[in-house]
Structures are given as structure tokens and as C-alpha cells.
Length: 421
Image (tube, rainbow, N blue to C red; front, top):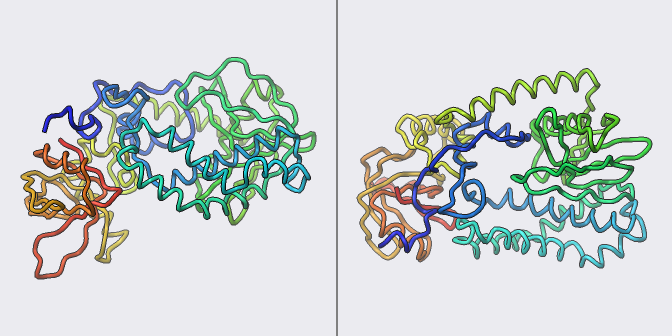
């Protein structure tokens, strides 16, 4: 099997150089670097042999995609409502606008289609396009319900919508006029002196109040409060959109089942937060510029890492032992569990199964034979297994075998991936 027959993304190949330190910092980027500088650098480096976009193609999980769909769909609704000057979901214009949009179900379905189209150049998505798109369509009733709940919580001011400026990797524009009263969705906040930026889900300005709202689709977390407080700092320090330095007097985290009011920061508290952010940014930038950047393998960092197949610090006996200890503390009971494993000496047993020898795995000892089963015929995996002498497998399902079956079995599901080392 020649390499030309297999997409380059399915080979473990490091970038030619580590990612450069970011020019602009954001809340998610800071947390990524602080959590694991190696993961951030591998994910942010360039891979021109794989695709034309910046960074490594991410692995796509249904829960984050569902959250993205909700945010984009909600932005679509707010844009349309602001366009006609609708000030409330009880406004007579609201029903007309929603009819023109086709209702919540059509908005959700259209958003799914747009997001899937945008992902077409991600080879890790195209390999699972049918599965992911079907699963997302199955979520439409739940997405519709969440979207309807969050829309019912909108507090509109009848202002115009502020359009999003560029993508996450693009350079910000220079001309950004001061904001007047209104509701602004997906608003870019930028503190030039801090070299920080962020996108607020909703900012509502009136003569009487200034409110930031962040819409969340999951359960409440402490980091959500940290994020919205940081956005209040960026708003206060955004000399273009907010030249008078007006402070936020209301912070709201809006979940499908509840709203949480976060206490706004005073001027002195904003100053303290600013100094804290400056210090954390300096430390993060120093970590990001190390060669190679520091790796911090643990269950939280590695569990959903999109580049762990590339990370030499992850594929070591020490890291796998640490992960095994952490996993046993979190879920000591036996049963089905997702694992990663590196194997060699592949031999096909049946059209849907291979035998192999484990090199590294947190749940199976090195040197142990393992049986690898596919849930269904998969031409891509067939090519990878036939071409590879050494394979790294992500998110295989390990099922406890009966005592009379000594060889462990790893099932490759529709979400599993395999990479040639």
C-alpha cells in the first residue's frame, strides 16, 4: 500500500516547526496553553501537507458541535430580530421574523448544514461525514428545544447587530466605531494594550444598563464565571467600542434550564484582574516559546486532545501508567471504557479483525497480544492497518472479556481513529 493512497493526516508526522507564540491572547487560548503548552503548540502549528488551514485538523465531538450549532443559530435569530428593530420576543415582529426564518427546526437544520459544509476540508471530518451529520440531525429536536428556551430569554434593545470581525486567526480590523444603545451578538471585544480579544455572545446597551450575557449549553462551571468577568474587563478596556470606559453593571450566564447572575467587578477589582491577566499571559507566552513546549499528560488534558497521536510525551510508559492510576481513581469499576493503544505485528484474522502486540496502553500491559475488531467494514481503516507496521489507535472500546478468554479485545467504533507511526 503506497502512501499516496492514504491521506497524510493518518500518518504520525510532527510539524516542521513548533507554533509561534500568539500575537493576541484569548480566554480559551490562555487556558489551553496553561493546561498543556505541548498540546497547544502541536494543535496550532502549520500542516500544509494535510490542509490549507492553520493548525492541526481537530477531531470533532458531538457535544462541542451541538454547542456551536446553538450559538450560530441563536446569532442568526438575533441578527434577524435586530434588523427589524424587534425589542422583545413578545413584539409582534417576532412571530413574523421567525416565520420568515422557517422556525426553530429549519434554523437548526440549516445551521447544521452550514457547519458541515464548512468542515468539508477537514479530513478527520470527511472520513466520518455520514456518521457525524446523521448524529447531528438526530439531535435536532433537542437543539430546537434549547434554542427555543434561549431565544425566550433574549432581552433586545432594538439596536443593530455588530458583525463578527474576521475569524479566530485573522488580524483584527482597525476601524471599530463606538457602540450606541442596542443589542450586539458575537461581539469582538479587544484590549489593544493587553493584546487580548474575545467574542461576547451578547452585549446589551441602554441608557440605564450595560449587560453582558454568555449563553452556555452545558452545566454550570467555575470557568464560565471567570470567562464572563474577563469579558467585562475587555469591554472596559476596549478604547474603540467603549471610549468612555463604561463598566458592565450586569453579568449573566444563561443556561437552558437556569440563568446565573454573576456579580460585576468594581473598578479596583477590574484593575486587579488586569494585573492577574498580564502576569498569566507573560507566563503562558514563555511556556509557548519553549522548544519543545512542556507537555502535561493527565486524564483531563489528554482525554479529548486532538493531537495526542502526535505527542511523544503521551506515548511513554510513564505517561500511560499515570493515566491508568488517574483512570482507576475516577472509575474503579470494570466495564466498557475508551482506551488508546499503540500496537505492532499486525496480522489480519478476518475481514473485520486483526491480531497485534501491544506496545503502549494504559489498560493493557506492553507485550500482551490484543485482538482488534471493527464494528463494520471501513475501507479507510482497512488501508491503514494493511499499510502500517506500527499503529496508534485512539478511542477504542475495551470490553472486559470472560475469564476463559485471555486475549483482550479492542473494538473500533465509528468514533475511533488509527494512525500509522
